[in-house]
Amino acid sequence: MPLKTIKTDTARVLSLEWILHVKNYKLTIDKNVCIGCEICPLACPKEAIKLEKQSKVLGEKAKRAKIDIDLAKCNFCGICDVVCPYGAVKVTVDGEHVLSVVEKEGFPQLIRNIQVDTSKCPVDCVECEEACPLDLINVAVLTSDGKVVENDDSLTNEEKSQLQIKIDIEKEHCPCCRICEFGCPEGAMHVRKFLYGKIAINSEKCPEGCTDCLDVCPITGALYLPDDNKKVHVNEMFCIYCGACKVVCPVDGALDLKRTKVSHTPVHSGAWNKALEKLASPIEMTKELKAKGSRKVMESVEKRLGWKEA
Image 1 (cartoon, rainbow, N blue to C red):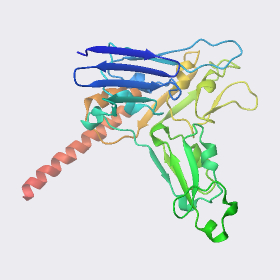
Image 2 (tube, one colour; image 1 turned 135 degrees about the vertical axis):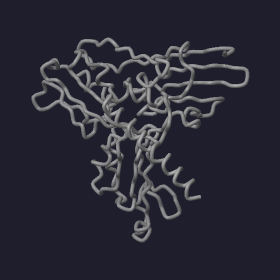
Image 3 (spheres, rainbow, N blue to C red; image 1 turned 90 degrees about the vertical axis):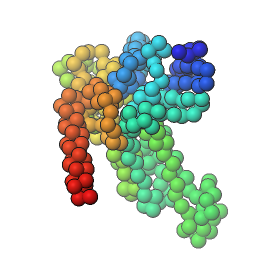
Image 4 (cartoon, rainbow, N blue to C red; image 1 turned 90 degrees about the horizontal axis):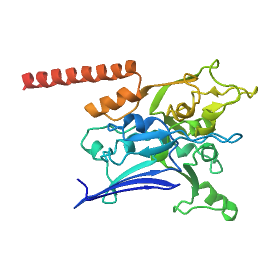
């Protein structure tokens, strides 16, 4: 048992601490990054994480759901850290970012597949940086010796021809919406989602003029108002199926969202199976478990054949 427990809840940060004899466990949520989605509350094995819808003032935009964690239930396992699409959660042990649940192969990591071919990038292009809805991309122009170029007017034509492009992406915060990929005119960006699914708005149940889901969605263009400006529509090309919209929707059944696939590293764990059961649809979960079962059978056969050959 911890010697001391501390919970701090400010406008910017929610933090929980366990202070033990030899270790200090800390969980921190950056509220500026957290968008109040469904993912960590669903994945938490202790059901310690809750979302609270915030009241809406007439005439103002809807606010993202407020996150809270029950310190009495949380055991700092780090699963919320692993699954957060936006990298809003961090679990540390003695100040170091440690994910023991991953190190012990009890839980997989999400695969954020983001590739950039800077050889295709013109030195004056910043389209991907401007397209990113979360401001996670920084494009810099470098000289041949690695110095950042602020203004290339003073450079010779030969020096300009040797300029290089450097693109930094805060991958730990990137939900892989693919907007940068579609915004890149040179085809230099290649992004694959790690959450797949289906989302639909039931126009019969969706209240006319309501934009609560659109107000909280952090991905520009995933939800939008058409020209008639009456009811929100979905663009699944950019949706990452985090469920922030579903959390704030005021009418039950007006917005239907299902996650059908989670791209992750290999894992053999009951903890992941339980999380997947909550995150994805039962049909898709069954498919993954069957695939795992088939792989285990193949591995067993290969081992037996290898033993016979020996």
